[in-house]
Image (tube, rainbow, N blue to C red; front, side, top):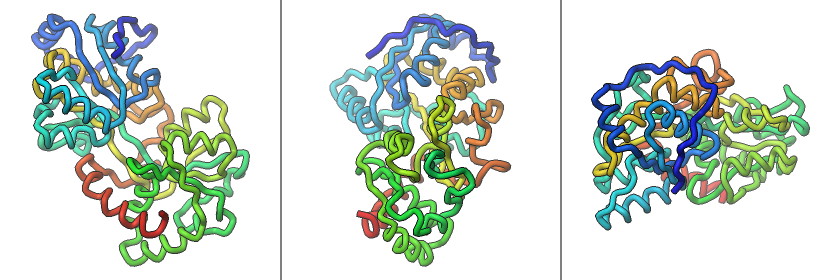
Length: 335
């Protein structure tokens, strides 16, 4: 657990809405909020925590882990009668905790598009990820990269592509989902049979580390990486870019309020802060893709939509329901 008390300097931001004064007063009396997060500490968690402390004088104590690690920790602490977390986030974290009865049904006031808000009130998106291919620009001259699913079948790319095949979150599963949606069941299976002949390297690591392999020149093409990660690395001089291959799979990173957390008012105030335009601008500065329509990403082309590229959005519930089907097909052709 890390305690943040430093202030973030130099941001001039405008919030989307003002928090209720009664909530602010109650949150200040609590003085602290505890956040279990899957987000990268130095990229977003620390800047957001610093800005919140500067604004309200409320400390943010955070702990980072994977979706599964956060689920297990919250369940164990709650069953021991010590719910320590006030807020949790992740792509699917809230689903397991909701089934266990540890998620509070509450949403902050917001002006987000309906797709970013659980209609039953258990979560709201804080940012999104678009899964696309990436390519090493030193090894693949711009303009020669594969632009469509069909292009991936070119003999040129045989043995030169990689993706993440870790059991917890296989990138190949997402590509299966995108191809199924685009081609339909029959054509998709014919496509998978051909793609399997391309000898795609399966790396049992994270999508971020697969991207790093492309940057290092180990693979010219990597599949189903987060397009904003390529933008972050490219801005630092890495020879990497992403491909707007359509449709992309877009998934949501969502936040939920725990049931019985020790600082419910501070939790609600911080929740509101993260999805306000102020919090969303910090998200954009971190290289993430905000969900507020008022706040574009640092590179506006990263966000799926009209004028950029086509994607299929999956809520946490839809992702959980679809993944077993995708996994079964992926195992059939690519394991």
